[in-house]
Length: 77
Image (cartoon, one colour):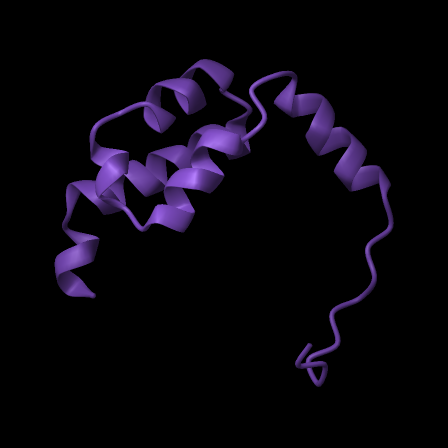
């Protein structure tokens, strides 16, 4: 775990999550196409390349309007 925390892959994944949280579409596209991301797990690569690249802020607003079911810590499904 310590090795990953100091790796380029960790920095890439962190940048990707930050760009998505900030709604920075251009940064999402840039990171998703970077050579560093190809060294991450294949599931992460697929998810990164499928991230919405349109109006990310609108998606966030829509998600916050929807009422989510409270988390049941005992539900293991």
